[in-house]
Image (cartoon, rainbow, N blue to C red; front, side, top):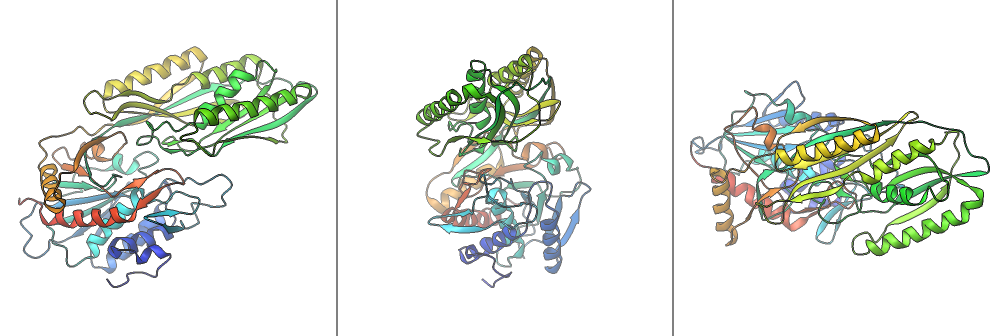
Length: 492
């Protein structure tokens, strides 16, 4: 294949180059959620250079249209869909600005990963495949549209803003799944929950030392697809320690901060405390004991867990004793993780909660959670639990950004077509699945209720964390499936 762009990394030489050259270019252009415009403009200019029809809605979504391959005009029109943004997560201490700095991908054996940051294979590989189809002149397909949505990871803004009348396709192929060999026919819905508690502060006790507690080194991950794996939540671990040990030693809490995204399992959490000088040795011993305890509990999953103490300079006042007790009780009692497994789909989480972000300001502390559920009643049940907890703590709670799940349709024509094509290629059927993560398909059903949809993709491990990696072989298989399904789309 002729090189489309100047290579930025070694991944541009991987096969199929049709995808990897685009993904290499995508990695070179910063595109975290809320900051996708540079990449969007690159795509627009590239599409125009290919004489493709491009348009954009008021939300910022991109629509690119390509005529049918000669002789395929009678096929049902298809929409290929991906989202432009990526999750910005980096290892603690990494000097990387996602708004200005390129991702640095590299080949690690059978995988492609990035240096100390998320890779953006979620959903950059899917986006690259959509652009590769547009660029190709040898792929047989019917009338084709590509829909690239904005801000999927931080609130599904693009999907929420999609209006009826923009798309002409009857079939939508979502490329945001992360396990080759699986076809997704449904997904969880979700809602953000924000708890806010007003703070009371008091004078600093005499003869104290100000310390910063740092709990880090956790694996983190996607709060949907990884929520059942037993990965530790840094916010929950630090809250557990502080609730169990601060009262005995009269430790004063100044602030608690942890996590950075509501849809990523927190990898780091920090607390600023004041410790009486006479209790410093005992406090350090407790931290050492707690680190040993949690490493033992989580030895199979969190091998790099670290709990350290740093000296810290600040003039901030500590919380009053009663306020501190309320804050730590709230954080310690807040549910997190799997709430219930599905009765209908073996091995799939039905309802979960991620206590994703904690932020302390001078006058308040805010806790941001993401609730996911395959069923509306599961979501509202957890909403009720959090509302009750907020009421007991004297906190306020706000639910926002609710998005629907994608209800499975066992009679989907494109589902059966893909299954048959897959079996023809590999000699066995793919797994037909429902995923405990938020795909945009449920929102697309609002303006396009008759759209027939499936989701598929290559194997991506540990999305939403700096451990994110995509399997090289699976990208080739995914590309083979993409070309085959487009050639076998049913007639109108």
